[in-house]
Image (cartoon, rainbow, N blue to C red; front, side, top):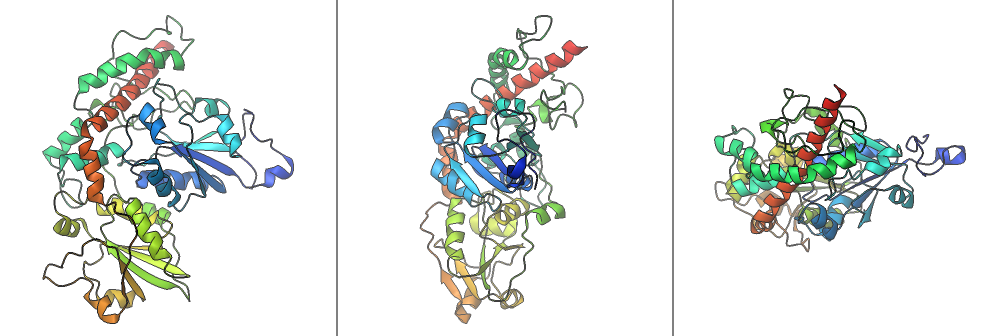
Length: 446
């Protein structure tokens, strides 16, 4: 494959000759906190642009400095990213600002990021240097999921995100309020960083363009991206003068995820069990797919020389029956993609029966059924859902060595609720400032 990432100069590896035939190495970086299918989809797209994907993961200290406290520790985040099947290598402790020096250190041709914006604490685009050098590629952001939304679901305690449940007024209120409940605070924050952002983005604006406006306008227009000329993602679908849904930043807002067969195909391996494979069945909610799940699946994967792991995911209503509260935090469609992205999983049964039946075992030719050390809740009739595999002698408990559960993650969030709300307000304030500056540039052209 010919290299296609060093166009535009910038001190990257020289093109041409024998080097032109080497594999194309791609760089991605990020916080990857509360890893979800949106992160996985970004990495899937990035991997498709080259032959080898290296993912840089920021430290807890760097994230706290620029965004606020992460939910997961850096060690947990390193392991989560490594478990995504499109990742070839991780780079722990990657700098928050992506530089040419970093790309050259890992011998990467270019870096890939989604079509949203990432800003430093000072309001600067973290990819400015690599964009200028022509070593930047863009992939599509996955609509309908964000860490902000997932945290909000935990705090609000409604079931409106479950499949087959209509959105209620409380959830609509959540999309307005969580992380943005102090709208005036977001505006004040935007005003504070607006001048810094404007000076950085447009240092040579005519007619006094190096000065920030005196106030943040209540209506931001869909100005074009300064690097590619396209409108910011999400703005095109709104009327001119709107920021995004409910008048908020289009990058931090909440939208509904719509599952498609194409998305499932993109995530699925498409591989059938081969002769000699050990077909292992595991079942559960796999909600907020996290390091505890990864540790369990990794241990299951180690049980056989040629494992073929099938994960059965229960419908939302079934999960809510045995978990209670507003679980699952992620609906069945979201959980499907999250599990499919794991390198240890070969296949997913969407809406698997709670009881592992003889029909299921025979249909998939299952040779081993595994469950973790968490409690097994009886079926609706009081029976053991693993009665059949136990009767056949193919049931095995697996100790992952991890005590992390979805409940513990929710407890982390609730314990630090105010910090996470402040983090989201701070993030949106910076985005609003950028949008305001982009609007000013557009106005100066006319």
